[in-house]
Length: 255
Image (tube, rainbow, N blue to C red; front, side, top):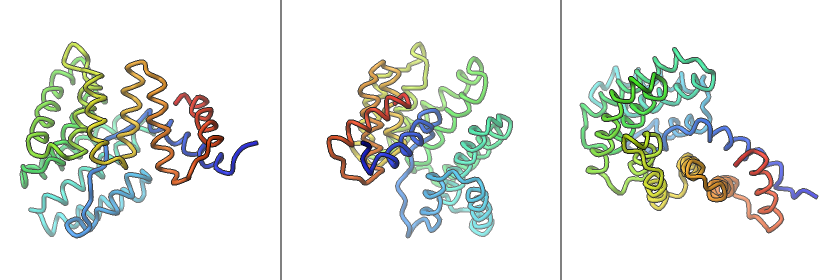
């Protein structure tokens, strides 16, 4: 007999199976005082609702028109553009996704021009350069943008080596780069684990850690990483039967 938690855990498993195929960048900490739209940006990250994202984009563009020297607004705009990119990728609209990543890069670069001491901004720009590689022809895009990913991550690490986003972005660099160009799965795993040591609540970083374990061939640890995130996300106190069923659900969805 299934436990009362079963349906919810199954729903979360489906959601995280989808995240494993997308897994965009990890969220950055938000301060409502310094960033009035921060909570709305974070909410849009979780939903990837296109209508909500387009509304936020319009609000940010209006605020930037009134405050053109606010680096934080450009950083928020870059995040929103990246989430819009995710929507287009899920829709398999490669042309629109390419336009979205270019706009996100422009906004992140403008944020850095106004404040080059932000580890978050450099990490986001590194992730966006990585997205350029995945959207383009890797043979040509890799040599062009790969060094930029490495450069931006080095800058962010020098600025803020206790920032969970900085470590998560470095992990993506190691995971997504071909081995002959410096890719290193064990270093990716180590970076994601360091990121989570600073902030265990990063849902997408748990997914990236699972992807790294999958690439290493350690299915058990990959499943454990996703299950850990599912348990945290659910907020449910799980008994032995729930945990056994969660493992069965994970196997069903390839987690």
